[in-house]
Image 1 (cartoon, rainbow, N blue to C red):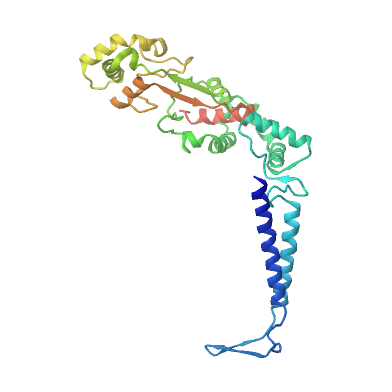
Image 2: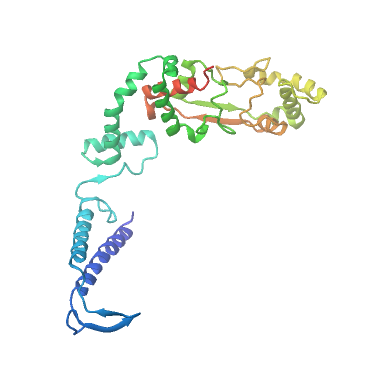
Length: 316
């Protein structure tokens, strides 16, 4: 915040408090020339106004509020760029990456800063860390069968994964359904763990320059035929001849490659839509999907429990 706006906030805040104090003090003094308890000469609906002072409990409460206001503003940040006597802050401000956040936490601890978010995280780690360690000592398969561990994994999922995959884990366009047993990078427990831990970068190259517009339509038609769709047979045969450029990733039979994250094109599961137009768009323009790494956000114990939860969603 610039010095000007900092000064502006300080003047407005303190000026308002002082003005209210003056107003209260003014209202505590009888300037009317009429004795206390005497009529003011105003009546409304049969009710006569008397010259009575403000109730003492009311004025005392106001003065206490003013005192607390000044004490609070002195101890905590709130007056422009003023940091407060306690050095308290809600969180490490201005961080734009996990690395910057880590460095900010280390700096705050080294300088003895009172960062509320860091304190709450440390408290949570001390309280819940042993619970996570207890369940993380199990195998992922056993975690998926342990009701309490699955509940913990569900909470972790809702807090960190539901934004993309949905609260029911069924995903949406561009975000995989985690309940259908289809995993482009493999659905084995260790593969799910690795996906969450390290993240994934899925790249489908655009092929319109290599295939041409007609070729895009033909390859899309052939891919749809692999899923039992009723398509133009001539276009599908032409697309099959050109599918060789796709087989390097998806395999000659179109069943994909988990090592590359290349999806199975024969199971009628479509991440970006399975209509003729959607498949053509995927081939024409390519796709770029990113699954972030959660290793440095959640840590290995929580990721393992989360992997167990995802595995439980696909239990038979």
